[in-house]
Length: 450
Image (cartoon, rainbow, N blue to C red):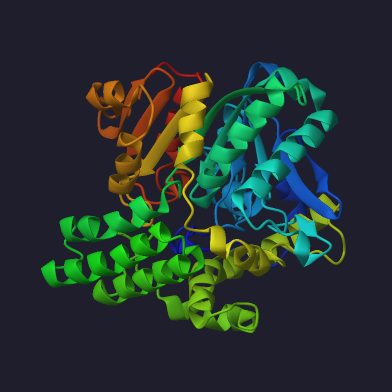
């Protein structure tokens, strides 16, 4: 299960695995637990918690909750096995797993994603508010199951569309804490290559492609004109058509760039047609061929890569997944249910966090990401309605160097806000530069000096 704008051609990153026999004995590493939380009647959210393997009492290390994008991409699959979990797709130990430093919680969100499921499709989330409320309900149920984490600092890390969800979730969770409806130590939210301001992202595509020699001036005019159509539709409140136009803009870019990889412009192009055979049976689900094309191009890749593992040895290991539930079985429905909300902005939620709370807010972006360019992210950040915006803009940007002395990233902070520019990375930063991602996470949660 995986989704929409959010995920790349990962076949370059994947190590294939053979028959499932013999794999089960290699899956477990360190202390872990998993299960379901009922967030609404007939709506069930799955989680997988890994306790840190650091040589300390686990309660002395933060809890990092990872939200995937999509909407409808699985945290327990993609984030876990392809990015930051303790093991890789081939079930080998991951060198730069975040579990080495923090407790790591993967949640299949929204309901219907990954192993999460609804008993009635009418219960699927149709907007960001429903998603945020479900996540607060999840946290209440999760913390009832493992109450020791009620006093552990919680950091929400999110990728792509997950960042849009995380911003409103953090606002709702903070409100619930203040109202004493939940006991939770929300400490920070980190928005990675996040779809927080879709219009700013789309309007930046032409400039980014032109600056990187992927289009010429004629191509720049075409892309900018199409991107402006997206912006105009959003301004007119035509959000469903805006999502369609967004897809048309991506298709145009594929044509004028000879198939640029949206997730990392330096990697092998993603050919949209390659996934049609995988997911062609989903055509009856979508309202248009354009929507089907987008889903197939961005989700079919993950189906081919992860389905055998998640619906085979992992499902067998977990033992709590209902027999009629398959990993990713409802992902197409999740995507379709949120199509009209896709182009909505979540900037006001970020502003609310900065203006009314002391929660640490971090935005981080990969240099090579086209879907959510650093240009687009900087644009909405520099226009935040927050007293600290101008001081942040004028603050000194600091380099982050690696062991060899090479610059890995830059960061700039003011009060409880920080922005990271991550070099040599695309949309999925931990998959591209795992060492940098780990170091950045340690800084954000306070385990390493800034």
